[in-house]
Image (cartoon, rainbow, N blue to C red):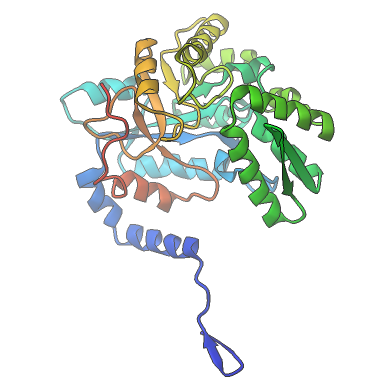
Length: 356
């Protein structure tokens, strides 16, 4: 408590700090292991994005899109210490389909196709002999589709305000201090994500012109090249899956457009890498971006699997075309990972999008 004059006021409690204390206590008491016996399922598919050096201080509008080498190393060590076998996605699906129970498995998957997956992740995978799947947005690699959220980061980093014109309305966002910049990034990103593709494209053109931001150049700087992918694929440790051409919200798109996004990304990967692209991950991957029609379309397109961005461990009843994943990134710790692996948070919820 703190006093103000003759009054006593409660000290504000940080909810995030409270959750962190709870997770540490749960792990210290072994509650996560107890829960995992009941709700941990057959295994887990982890969802990550980019990787950065330990101690990197660059601002990210969405910190969850990155984790450090040290944190990822700790993730791998924790999974192995908890009895998980790190396997490829193909192997995981074979084991999931088998009635024979064995050791739990875990898969590492990375979305979008960031260049640091080659520069930082690939050496780590080789050193620790760990397989991984990278879902590639092919238009980012080819340079003509913008990973526009990184352009928004650049604009907010370089200017005190950002104006976004959508449907003849101007939305203004301030970046005068770190808190305002963080808030503005999330608001602007939500606005652009939910805009219709043509409307968003016009807004991005306006931002490029007024703020001297080259979205395509930023994408190419941040994303893998085909040469990098061919080298990684040849190692046998890295498999590449499709993640659409332009990273749209598939839910609500005309079916013909959604089908093109899925099939053209797979065809581009197969042409450039000379290997089948059997697996798919939905852009954004949350309930607002994926519904039953989108899941059915991924199945009809012939993918062996399609992954969401939520859902917890891989338990009986999961659809191969609505695979649950456990997200990891930002300030997430191994305590967070262990609690998510336990399945406690998702034990009493309906498996996401159960459509076979």
